[in-house]
Length: 327
Ligand SMILES: NC(=O)c1ccc[n+]([C@@H]2O[C@H](COP(=O)([O-])OP(=O)(O)OC[C@H]3O[C@@H](n4cnc5c(N)ncnc54)[C@H](OP(=O)(O)O)[C@@H]3O)[C@@H](O)[C@H]2O)c1
Image 1 (tube, rainbow, N blue to C red):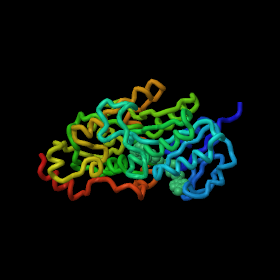
Image 2: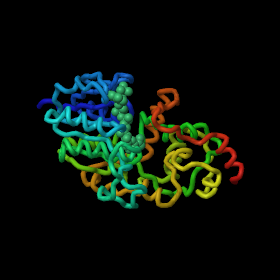
Image 3: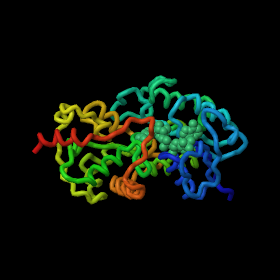
Image 4: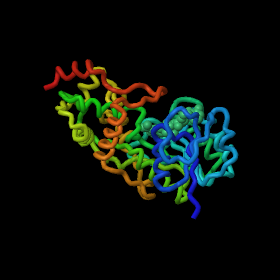
């Protein structure tokens, strides 16, 4: 049987890299299209140099079973690639985001929740705009992966890397309460595996791709960080009110964490039943955390950081000031 072929638009960062690695592990023949600025995953069959906003010549001649696109800028760029590939790829998957839902999305929200307007605006609008641009060209053959928070090796936002480095440093570590607050995310490798399964099965349309609500909790997540790093961390649990009163920003200063309330319910309370019914499996938090720590150590502890995303993490002085007030 002929090898299945995949065109990966990107493929050398975080999510696209995981897609390429998963496809290679399955014996698929993988072509990457990018500007050639970063290391290529081992086993890639071909790398085509090009510019998404300019020269697509390198991909206008070939044919592939599937294409996966991780673009997060202007929607027109996705529309252009879709037009260029129309009739020459079977299915087109776009790594979208749950940000396309009107904010904050309802607790238990599904793919039916209200959407933002698509367009050349903020992150949510460009992600929705890209979905629309793709659907216009590919119709039902467009698979829209509305990922929740994505964690795992090669993460280039710095969320899990920040927590790992902080817990590894040890001592008294500010732990944002409550301890049993549910956390929901998807391991990048589970997202990739499900995407390829879905493409192979001929699925199309939108899917919320994220673990079940309560997949883990802040307490279990931090325990996994301590176990993986071996850091002698003493977690000091703080009430959300004390954290907010100290001027600490949820989500960015303390990655992953949102105080209980509508924002938390929307971000960590999605209902991914449709993807679960279609076979999504999410590994345990201990595996995501341990594997990300192994990767982080293999690159000397300093995670890459996407320049177009704000830095994350709590300045040590801010943490120390609040810790002084806590028993
Ligand atoms: N992190 C999260 O929690 C989260 C949650 C939901 C959704 N998402 C979505 O997940 C996706 C993340 O994707 P990723 O960045 O990790 O994908 P990736 O495909 O691994 O990396 C980005 C790729 O794009 C290439 N690239 C960048 N600019 C280019 C250009 N102008 N022309 C051609 N190629 C270009 C880069 O290579 P070169 O630099 O060499 O060109 C790189 O290979 C985004 O769509 C994001 O919206 C993320």
